[in-house]
Length: 58
Image 1 (cartoon, rainbow, N blue to C red):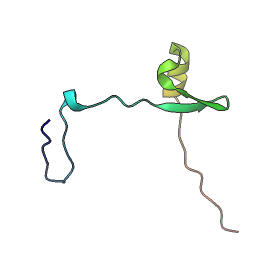
Image 2: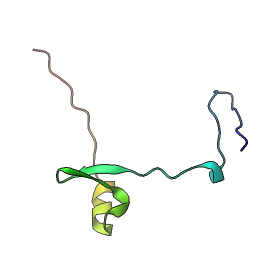
Image 3: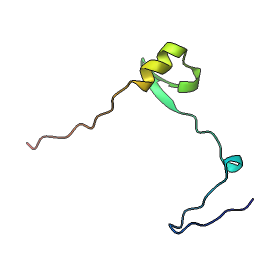
Image 4: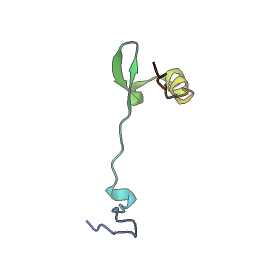
């Protein structure tokens, strides 16, 4: 395996060296891989909007 070092210092992998990342999410109280969702549930997952809640000072 050949790892090339770019200017930033991070290794660069070829597509053949990469591994697919499995995404899990919490649905109805338990965690499941998104790959096991049906078509409709995958669509709902893609439409989710993420937000960051900020704390109010007391």
